[in-house]
Length: 286
Image (cartoon, rainbow, N blue to C red; front, side, top):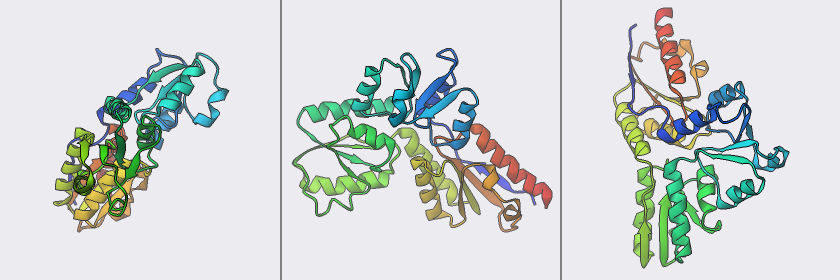
């Protein structure tokens, strides 16, 4: 049975991730390079880079590097303390932090120095949020959707920013709470415009398909949010990292006539294409 396959607009690599991966792939920098943590939340991409002598290293192992070794800061960015530490080791630092994230660092640092308390809307354990918090002495209030703020004591002078991949819905929930209590509130909506557009396109597409496939790393924050959005509109929604997790037998279901595909910001085009090929292969097997 011939199926219609629709790929959502703005699927796959975002600007910041593509920039980071391209940087890590640049052999004009050094033959062997290191990234501080996995360059992106995609195991296939990380493995491919390892084949080119680009290896992930954790901060706890940083002393194993030699002076002048190249270390790449991934798109999520790092705290000021981490950046200072790397500089003290005389490493060749290549900063591939997404410019949108760097902008958050600067604003948080500036407002913190002006006496504002900082509140971050996002996942407290996500590396981007950890990095942002590090530009205000790790003193930020961090909330996912504001549900933990209802009974909390909110500072009267507050600057609010967001993880770049957060849902607009959560941003609005937090603001609706803060605006009731804060006397001086600076709200900087730092959700990346590409993230917002990607989520909207996925939402629209998931409403009109029989099967929605979300492709991305299981530990990717933006991919998880895409899955949550699609699942709200299409019960038949799958989250996969690559085509190996897609069952041909499952795709033979005759009730599946229209298939929608979206992909997280850390998913390269070649993985999306492999998923499409797998679906077409299932059609031939029927």
